[in-house]
Image 1 (cartoon, one colour):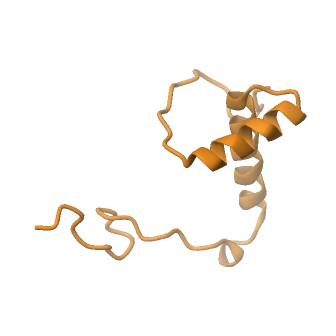
Image 2 (tube, helix red, strand yellow; image 1 turned 135 degrees about the horizontal axis):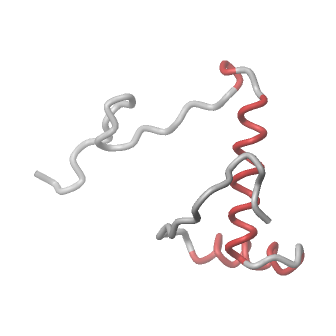
Length: 80
């Protein structure tokens, strides 16, 4: 099920998530008669579509990520 808004080449993405979240996604995918990949794709596209319809000031702020100059740093993870 490919969105008309995001045509083009499909790319692989390694995603690390907690086992419990994967289990929930797998159960939802089975209930919706989709593969796990199709379910994740659907949920991401749906959320991005919903987010783009909201006014900018209603969108939640991104969490700080180490190394991202636009957000505060969480410190050096290597312990140095």
